[in-house]
Length: 389
Length: 184
Image (cartoon, rainbow over all chains, first blue to last red; front, side, top):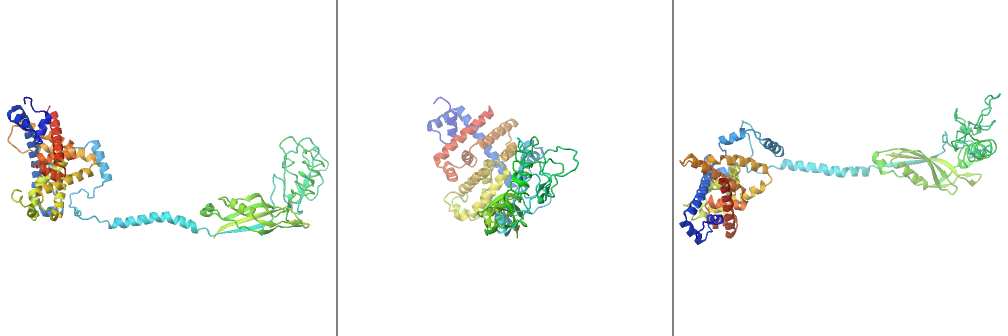
């Protein structure tokens, strides 16, 4: 074997796996022997360096069984070079890492010159406090998760009181629909104009009419001033002042008394305002205000409708959680077949209570109101009081 | 160790003496394996504590030295596993300990040039050791620092003899490569 050992062969020799021929070559070849010897020396030096270091560490404290069992930390004498290393300002990265370590794993013992009592190295950790703390935290968290739904579940001791009442609806710019003096009514008029009645407010309601309503004032300097009125005593307090006189449901456009007949305003007949007949206001007949639906009132001769089947409205969940109380007021029309129809909500509460009230009231059954022994549609107000107890 | 090696089961009865006798060896191995004197001391202590606790289980099938080495090897493995994510510690301790290695060398009354050369080589082996895989490192150190034979290494590491041979060969080759590249 003339060639020197390859790198792999040398490694194998050190690993004690060289073949017989390789060993023979080593014995005869000075170069290879030197190569092996050099690395052997290096390994020896390494071993001796590590041994020296280990012995130095050992000599600082004689190892004993007690030391092992008591768990006393082996106090190494401060190494000058290590101290030097510590004194040297660490790099930014190292400082940052130390800060992170301090935050993530804070030192359990603070650095101080005074002796500090530390717990035994091999002693068991005391988990009693943490165990109780954990229990309490869990109890609180689970309690928070469980109790609120339970509270809201027991909250709704609610009460709803429904009352029917007669309600006069204040009118401003809409057809008067209520009738105090008479159970029904209405009026209409018009001057056979080609255009639809113009929008405006009816004139003041009075118990008699001297001059029918006029949309246009023709004579600006009359010798005798007479206010135009409609016969509607419940509109007496309504003072339109300077507002344009006209049909509340009219169109915005040129002033017009409407296509109706009789001298009033609108598409009806008579000296009133609206599509009805007579000197009143609205779609009814015979004066006063109205749309043909009867209002239970004094002297009208209309008997009020009577509730046969009543369904109690329920509280909505939202309102219960928000602890909303109050009254929903609405106007319904009780039709001749005894069913109720919502006309409008007068006072709203929100939180779904309006809807609940409407749903309930719509399903009520009535004995319809009667006039002269015959069932007539009647308008009544319904107040639904929602209260929490 | 020579005096009591023929009856290791008896030897362990006097545990105080065992500690005194084997402490430097275990510490030496652990020092080279973890390359951090603080950790090495802690692990050495841990090693003897474990040995003490399970001393009744030791029946003397292997030599006491090998038995202790087995514990130490396991500790190194656990330690490496625990520290895998503490990468910053690696950089820090390597910086400290490798700088100190030159001072460990015993004074052999050699010329400063030779001393510098040896220091350099030792440093190179030290650094190369750190770059080895855990198994290669363990096998290498047990063989060349602790002077265990293949059978004992196989016993201490739980590897088969052929596996030990392979790891040893690869470790030597890697270290030689590192040392030579350092030298050139």
